[in-house]
Image 1 (tube, rainbow, N blue to C red):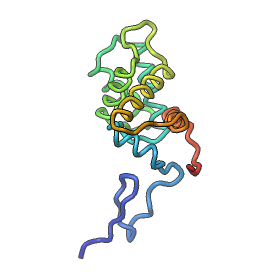
Image 2 (cartoon, rainbow, N blue to C red; image 1 turned 90 degrees about the horizontal axis):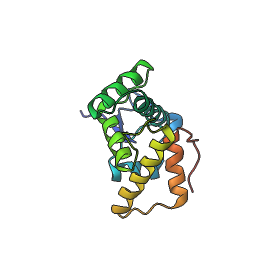
Image 3 (cartoon, helix red, strand yellow; image 1 turned 90 degrees about the vertical axis):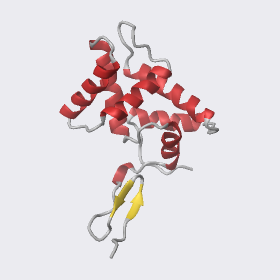
Image 4 (tube, helix red, strand yellow; image 1 turned 45 degrees about the horizontal axis):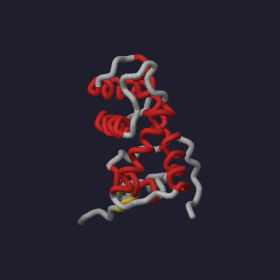
Amino acid sequence: MMPDLRTKNHYVWNPDIHSEPGGEEDTPELITQIFQITDLPLLSPAKWKATIEMLAHYGNTHDFSLTQATAWTRDELKREGIQVGRQAIGVILRAALFGGAARSVNPGPNADDIRAALIRSTTDRAQAASLNLTEEEIAELEEWLQGQWSCRALD
């Protein structure tokens, strides 16, 4: 007999064995939609914040190498108990570069510069896919990337 599997926010579980995943940081539909359209990884706000900050740290302490940047960032996040895959970091880094985060400036881009570049590239990609984000929706995306998302109902 097949188990009664449930799905939610990219989780699959058997309610006879596990409780429903999610908790306090359920992903809002808007964020899920933006990340699906733009192929960005669906990370929690805390992981986005940590990843962006670690990329900024890398950019200010190393000569840029895409291969080294993704491996170093993954390893440093892991040391802090944060699991983010190297492929996800690569997608984030490429989006930031596409959005204008300079990789050859000294000092390198800070977290705010990287976040702004991500917002630019994400809104451009969303618009190319016919998802024109309002200023309020862009602000919600920015809150998510800053790790400042508060669980609130969206209107």
